[in-house]
Image (tube, rainbow, N blue to C red; front, top):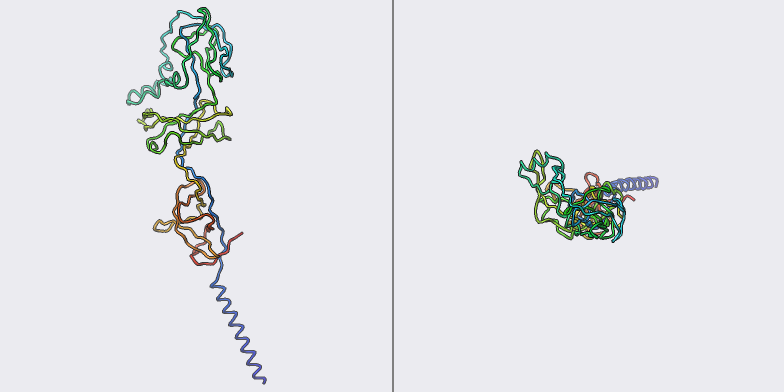
Length: 347
């Protein structure tokens, strides 16, 4: 009886030890990895062409006189806001002719003789150094003042801001030359040079984002309004420079923060992806054959999935194919992780 009882105890001990060994092996085989995951983010994605440019007036009206004259009275100053019909200045007609000037700035848009010489010697395009014709026509209309033959009152042709005036009483004005200018500064445009490689991508009507150091807290939206029908070449003393097409972007400047002459960064939206799917770069990998893939979590297990990426953003990449919204993708997986492994999502 004693021997039988000892045998039973021995059998139960062996059974317990065996169960513990089997359990240890099962736990080892079913090891669970703790992982961090990211869900795909849905967003509108813009592919952009980034260019540097300058702001300029789009609603400028230049004023001209039909005869030479001498200013007798100034009623406003540069920077004043005026209304249509408001008196700007008065002049008396004279017979005095315009003196001939040798100032380069009267002939070119620069006083840099070296830049002019370089353009001539290299056979470059002098048009960028010549006064722009749209200062006289494209930006506005010609206004002819008239009077009683003794004094002529020059009035504002529109509501706006006075941008140019005679310098003072006694100043001479001449027919054919702008004597004053009024501008609607709510209409601003940006002039950029579009490199040849982007000519086929950028079209009129495309939207653009505008930022700049002069307005760091504001993002303006604009529209490509015009591409010039010719290319220009940059002028340089050391090289001929690359060719590009001058392009204009219209901007609504309702708050008046955009001033003419400011530098601006323009991002033209050449393509838009609605409901694009984005993932952090740490979730996307590439094998030796160049195939991109991710690791998914499905029902507590790892699934390796091939994907196709699209546009690359600053911190994320577009997933063009292979995944769907709601998929849980493992971030920075541990070395050796493979399909079928058990995982638990870190919360």
